[in-house]
Image (cartoon, rainbow, N blue to C red; front, side, top):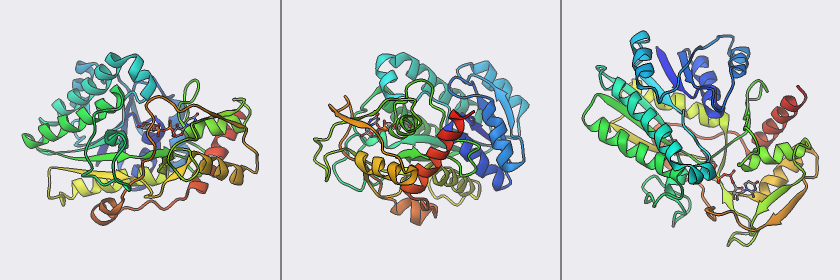
Length: 338
Ligand code: WQD
């Protein structure tokens, strides 16, 4: 069974390609290399011993998407990661996000709807909940007014898929990630943020290797135990495995609904200071940081209720925050010592 993974050379995409190959799937990757590099192909191949097929395509080019599906007519399963994903950038440049994230999705679905049946897994995000009222967050928590154009493209993407699945032979799973962190234990693949990292963990590991002077902790006046914001940090390998299980569920046609939604988190919240403590423990280094004002648009806390993913999807996160931080740290050291 040949599976298309869009954005398959990205952080979560590459880890998912590894787990798909480990389960015997043939994988073809589409990536436009705007936020990744072909080097990642070598890393994937080093882990699995199998080089995935790769096509450098920009999904905004409708004709290129059409030609791809003519060439790979046996693709009926798609895991769609390819999207712009920087919250701050999306506020500065909303049209880039609406064009890239929405038109790419529409062109993919237009091809899949022609097939007798198709399985579609969508990379969504807990950002659709905004600041949820109740913790832990369940899938039926209200989807709030988007906190950013990036978040809006995830919300709109889910609605586009739901409307399309109603009138086509496409079945879909929407996976709402909490905070993906860490790297593959082989240290062959990991997160490769371009420029100054926006996310917490890559900024911590870059500070650890001396690339950054010190970490700014954005606010310690939140109504949380230690005053810093709380998130659900999930190891990227656990997240990748959830995609394979979701695909197998769609292929077995066991899902009763055309579209199912799952929160993917550990179910445990960790504060920024706790993440720092975890890094210091696994690296045996003191992390220089300074308390700064809150970051615009940040929420106080978000962590997942994982009952549905555990009971319906049959998936549970197994790796700890310390294991995630240790793998992220090993990866950072390897990348910097290149
Ligand atoms: C985590 C916590 C920051 C950096 C976003 C998107 C989400 C997903 C993951 C794409 C917050 C604090 C951060 C720093 C800090 N993106 N922080 N100093 O904002 O929860 O989620 O990234 O899929 O959709 O919304 O993740 O890692 O940016 O921040 O104190 O230098 O760390 O304030 O409390 P976030 P994050």
